Image (cartoon, rainbow, N blue to C red):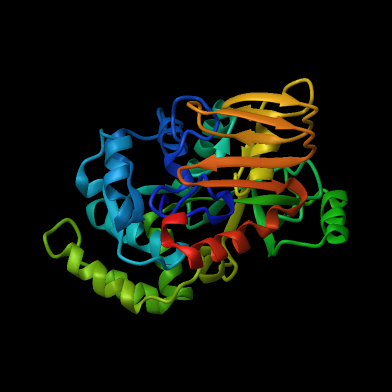
Amino acid sequence: MAGGVGTRFWPFSRTNNPKQFHDVLGTGRSLLQQTADRFAGICPNENIYVVTNEDYVGLVLQQLPFLSPEQVLSEPVRRNTAPCVAYASYKIAQQNPEANIVVAPADHIILKENAFQERINVALEAAAAGDVLVTLGISPTRPDTGYGYIQYEKAESDVKKVKAFKEKPNLALAEEFLASGEYVWNAGIFIWSAKSIIKAFEAHSPAIHQIFASGAYYCPEEKDFIQSAYQQCESISIDYAIMEKSPNVYVVLGDIGWSDLGTWKSLYEVSDKDEYGNVIDGHTMLYDVKDSIVKTPHNKLVVLQGLEDYIVAEFGNVLMICQKSQEQKVKEFVAHAGAISPDFV
């Protein structure tokens, strides 16, 4: 899934070039490329499909040149993750009704790739063996209020029955979740067979099922069909449409070095820091700067003095300087910048 805009990562993530197409960690590979890379050994390149907004098809093909155009599924409008998952799943099922499918966001960080592959293979075995919908649960390291949680039944098996999905909690509730030992973070990574997910859409989201079950795939009429289908679809997440309603949901727990990289603070937390707690990507001179993240163009010298716990981010025609503790205001900044000029967002 590579169609999001990543507003909270502005000004680095922009409407015409969102964060999944950037080398966020300075590894020489974009987040999208890293996501594709980690499926080496799990599935061949010809079985990788990318669902993205029609504006980003060229970027996807540029960054993943091994893809054929029919492996890039173009969404005419954004309708959240349920239609995105449905489009890919029904298309794959038409080609191979026995397919097993992994759904992965293109903008997440996974630092322990061997552990990720092992956990995915455990989930794929379960998905191939029965009518189950599997998700990866991340072992929580802190009472984080920015993630959704999954409550599961304790069992010896690697594949545990899900009791409930919980929305982002307040701090007191997050601390309770952590203390109970029966909650994990919801990573938004899903594993199922094509048959199981189509059966779930039919049962729990019949409107979406009706739209995509009648689809024209792998043919010249596909583009017109999808244009029409997305105009009819409601905007709804796969969690609300399917996962929270289904009785056959299971979770595979994993310590895979995961971050959804939703915010500047999350990038700060997973990045290497200097002796003063700074994360630096750019050509900088720093004086009395502590616990800050600085991401600026390498062809520009940036001199900073006296900052503590700040975000300094420049990309294109926008420079943002913001206290790390106030990063929730980034969406507000984007709205105001867009009102001045669309060129700023």
